View: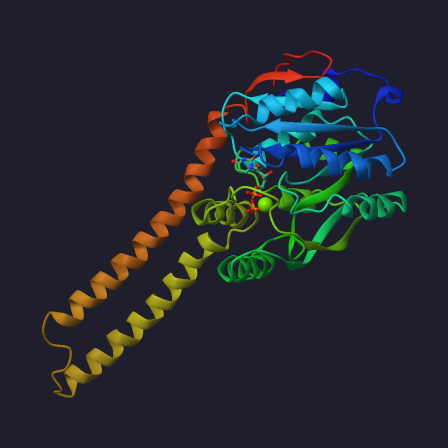
Length: 329
Ligand code: UDP
Ligand code: MG
């Protein structure tokens, strides 16, 4: 894929200072308020701005509302996907098209308070190139989500090959240099906050209180959360694969001890370990362990297969407000 910046050969002077990228999937209930809050905050940011909304195959009238916003304010730009490609891919498309010197990624549901953007911009002006928002508290989430999220971030921190900040979501500001680097990462199974750590650059966190969803339902049920967690782990760690080796060694040593003990017992005339139960239990147990590791191998293999297929990350039905409204991806 061609990074959008190559196709859009505007001079630096035409580019806005800030791009706000927002993925939208069935968010009709929040769009008017979202625009009002973003525009209020960006008016104070001290620079020109664009708002890039990526419509991720919404089935409600989100696109209609976005088009109405765009009719009134041409700083609103819209990328309309051909179907739902998922949150992480929607963010990717937004950053592919963003032209700002700093690009801010936030959710549509106002759980990421737009006012935090001003503090991010302050840090950016001090010279930081990635300013990620760290949740110090979360409102309106179930204890289950809080607990699992907490556990997940700590697990990932301990097994990942890179340092991914704790309790930081996708809400962040990235300097254009970071965005250009991110555009070169085209992996299919994407964990954007991990990738934005992987690229390096000067990073810092700002704390914020995660608000309640303004309206509507979460778009991340448990199933999708687990899938994202698996993407995160497999993208940044080989530990699940290596576990098979550790288990293998442990069982090999155990069976060696078992052999020696059995031989000694038999020679001394003790008739232990008779009957089928011991054999059956150990065969079943090891069979189970082997299947688990086959599954883990399968997980990595499937990801390799998706990469090899080389399909584009997303397809755009139409883009509104860019140099060419039907740009190739
Ligand atoms: N989203 C998306 N595509 C999806 C799922 C979610 O574009 O397939 C968007 C959604 O509209 C929202 C953001 O991703 O702007 C985060 O979703 P949500 O707030 O429901 O997640 P949560 O905050 O509950 O984890
Ligand atoms: Mg949310």
